[in-house]
Length: 336
Image (cartoon, rainbow, N blue to C red; front, side):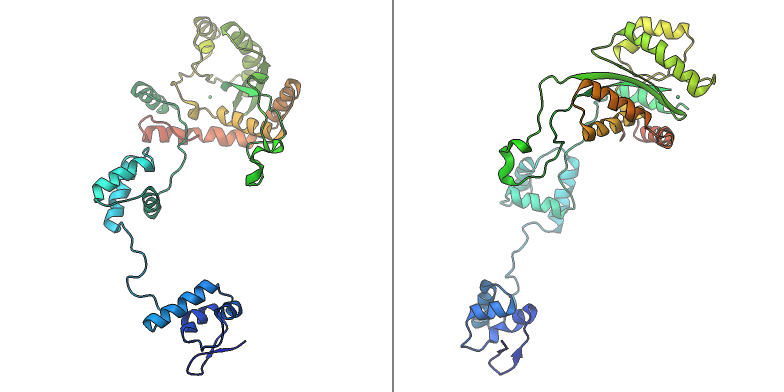
């Protein structure tokens, strides 16, 4: 269907041309047919025609669009306040903005203004708390120029679902969309060591660990791993400041064996590359989802043996970069 204006000119059959010329549409054609032929909504055609009848033009009058409540200067002040008080929520920023700008502002208005400031609300990352003494010790430790060891806890995962599930909004209470969990799942405590040369031994036991059991682990697994990986070359042994590690009988045993121990600053999991190994293995466990303790132990040992040497070299070679970051941040927490 071809539409013509009052002066007889043909109106092109496109939405853009309709927006420019539909105000002069000749009478006799219903707005519904015009909207259907031009693939526009009936309300859009009605508004354009009414605007033309009232003002003689289809263009929006100057100042007719919604004005922004906060100008560029206000946005700069809002951005400075948000960066200064990063932990403040929008509900706390809104009263400050109303008092500072002397304007009636809603929470949604402040939320949109924050996005206009090129800022976005993110969930804050969890990092260990460090006091000034711990930061200073980390800073001094980072200036130094290793067999890395650590323990980690693995739990049996229940159900078939992982962290995410694909569902509709109505399936919120559907049992097939729930992730099953138990109050005290069966778990294993795992000790392991690694270096840039390769993976060391892996020891798995149930329950907690004390100093006596930790010394047995060092005798049966750490010493053979050190001889196999370094072949008699001197090395420094690293472990964190857990109670079994810093017990008097453990330190005396290490002293008798003449094992050099790297002094470890407190709350520093970001400086140990073996933490990345645990993260990789736990991600594999979430994918495989072992149902029993025996399956969990078998999966852990299999994934431990499958860690490639280039991955270990990459992790160990990244330590100097982490140390430079610690020095740059004056001992504060880094990313890991």
